[in-house]
Length: 392
Image (cartoon, rainbow, N blue to C red; front, top):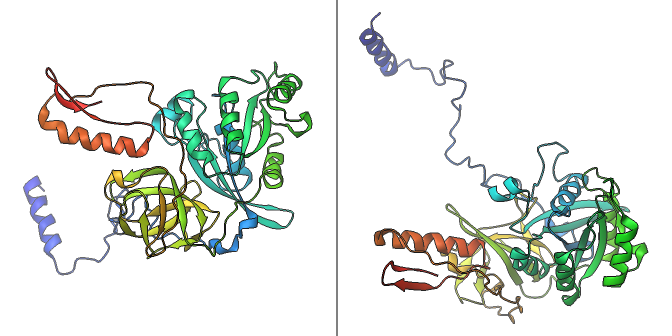
């Protein structure tokens, strides 16, 4: 049969009233059901968790801080594996490092959070972990993360010992009056000298040697002891569910379909879908569309309660509406805004001008999204006689 004949026969078959409901000759790569709403990053359809089973006494909020390349993200991976949050496979490396540059270079740029569930001595605990960067350039991410925590794990390389950012991050935690758990990592290396590092920690930070935990995050040696120390040494949050809602926005991201996704730490009350909330910074009112926790992927919940860390989607369409350090509260239940944290001091400056001034609004939109995802970046309008309107 010629090509024209086959085409005519094919159209005749398509128009036939005896067309089967689900033809068996579909290609294997073609889905057999509608896929319009099946976005991999959408949490729609997931079973919601009941977070009321975790009282404040069983919650621990903590960060991992260290100098660059001392093993923070590797330790975070092991903690996620031990608590069953992720599977123990070779693919699960740098799980909390989601940016492309983080995976390519093996560094943490953006702080990420994850909720872990762990049973210790017959009690179920909710451990909220925030992995932080080690480079001095991203120290603002550390200070923001610590605002949502009551304690930190201070990781020190058993080979290199205490470095510049170890000291800087220690004093950030010390000034915030957080509980500090010293952990000596990479004890499996040939040149490891944990005794020397323990003496450094005792001399510089006045932390007794017997409080240091020796681990190998890469091999998983003694990592479970770190989890137990978190429960024993770090206090639960000092807040009350009966108080009015008071939520601190400590991070935010932008989604083209759902708008702004704000990471929040609750210092009082509770929040759920349908609540009317107000931003203390902008005074704008929103209706909550979704709340949940990060495991580290989005997991919707019925409610979030005082002491817990999670995310909220409330129909914020403008990137400027989610200010880092802002306080969210219920409509008609105003509260005193939380103090937030010290704003970053700019160190590097750059001027950006569109090649074509017709692209000015596109550049403006891109910069607004950048400032949402990285609040240490500040942007001001600028103009040049040679280059025209732009940004600095």
